[in-house]
Image (cartoon, rainbow, N blue to C red; front, side, top):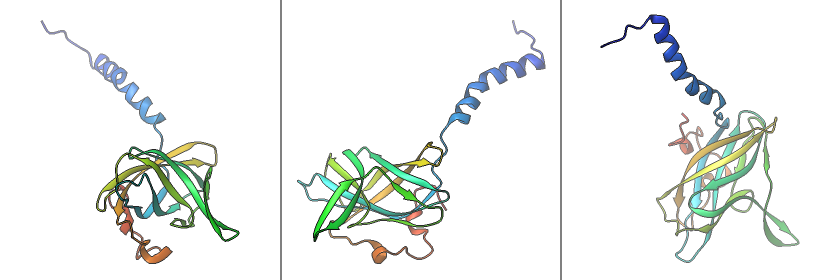
Length: 177
């Protein structure tokens, strides 16, 4: 009724079953080596179809922020706002370089993440799931999921452009300590 198995055949069977898992793990993408501080998105009013997301990023190695994705909007892009001839202009950009160890500030009135075609209004206290897309020096893609709390429509950036305290405040829920 029961077939006797040798230790060698058990090991071969176990190894054959485990091999696809090991190969998949070896090809899995490593998360981007970036720390995120003070992430937030601006709340909206009922008919508003766009908003911005802001945060401070510090990369452990040179990278480029080349995109963002989310399920809360039809389109999410990396944007830049500039003052040209006394007129504020906003435009999509292909990427922003991050130098190793140097903070990059995504803020109102500068570089930011634009969420367009919102599926519903963003209310204070909600949390959005964004995925930041980075490119490393070899052209490899690195993604980083970020949980972003929604603040009131009238919210100002925390610390008005300065990272707060020991910079751990924005890390909750990101798997960083």
